[in-house]
Image 1 (cartoon, rainbow, N blue to C red):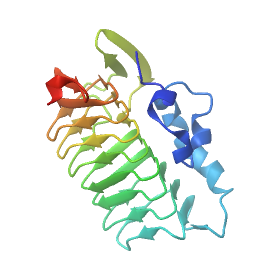
Image 2 (cartoon, rainbow, N blue to C red; image 1 turned 90 degrees about the horizontal axis):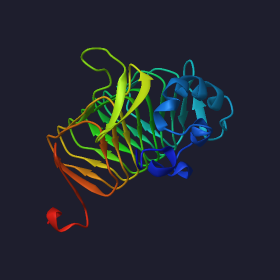
Image 3 (tube, rainbow, N blue to C red; image 1 turned 90 degrees about the vertical axis):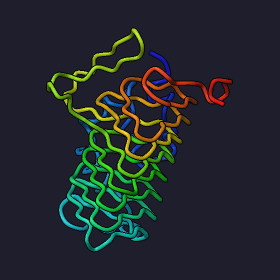
Image 4 (tube, helix red, strand yellow; image 1 turned 180 degrees about the horizontal axis):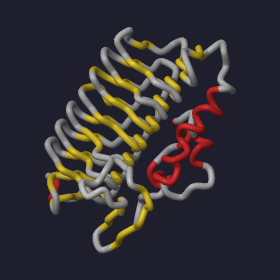
Length: 226
């Protein structure tokens, strides 16, 4: 298994949740701890920079939150974040600094690093999105298998048991997901990779790749990507 560990995917300097990842090797190992971590971290946030609104919800005073947005705790909305019309944050969510949560986007048990954009009709559940990653309009993470069995991460002939029933996608820093794409349970996309619109992705996509369709993935610098 290559390039799917926390150190391979994420710049931890670009999230308020860096401590959450301490001691973990793979990013999905922290999914179960997001809620309790938020409660612990929220209690330490500066009252000059953050306002507590409701039970276990902390919102940066510099953030913009539409009056029609629904935010359930535990949740932290970072500095200069933009939570737009009818966004639905179901809980256990960290929205990074300068991140965008858009119209009718739903979040549940997620960490969005700084500058992440999920701006149009996205569903992101049981997932971690790295610095400046972006999900195009209508793209979603599918976080439960149809047969309800535990999620396995597949990388070619290699298979890694996660022990998790709910596991959406791990997006590395600077990942671009095209409009209308579905990221199936256990998807891991390496840093700086692009997913074509209307893709159905499963398994591991290596860093610096372009995913055109299943079985057609090329390195950004290779001639086949021309």
